[in-house]
Every structure is written in structure tokens, then in C-alpha cells.
Length: 89
Image (tube, rainbow, N blue to C red; front, side, top):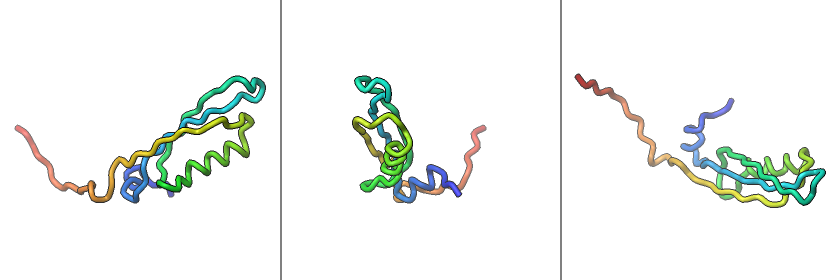
């Protein structure tokens, strides 16, 4: 069962964005870029490396380089469940 992004963030996941540069199969001198984004765990980045392995095994365009960034959006200490409602007028 898939978890919501909020559930993942509460478990320590952060948003990982990677820009993959790859060469065209027929034109080796041309570099293209592909943006990949998912919630992942630092510092091991299992989902990112799983995607890179998938690319290596299944995609014909060989990778030139990968740049990525990771940002924890919220943590368990920042989450507070609020119960209540305010009515104006």
C-alpha cells in the first residue's frame, strides 16, 4: 500500500530531485537532461539509486552525470495535529 507524502515525511523522508544528463543513443555528442523527483531517505538514497540502476539496465541512452538535491520538508517534531474550528461572523 502506498503511503502519502505526509506519512513519508513524518518517517524521515525528504524530497529528492535529480537531474540526469544522458547521451542520445544515435548522437553521442548530444547531451539531454531528465528530471526525476521522489521522496527518499538520506544519506543512502535507496530510491534514487534504484532508479539509476533501472536507467542503466533498461534505457539505451548512457548516463553522463547526475546532480541531485535533497530537502526535508517537515519532521516529526514539526507536525502538530490540530482539532478545532473557528467561525467568523
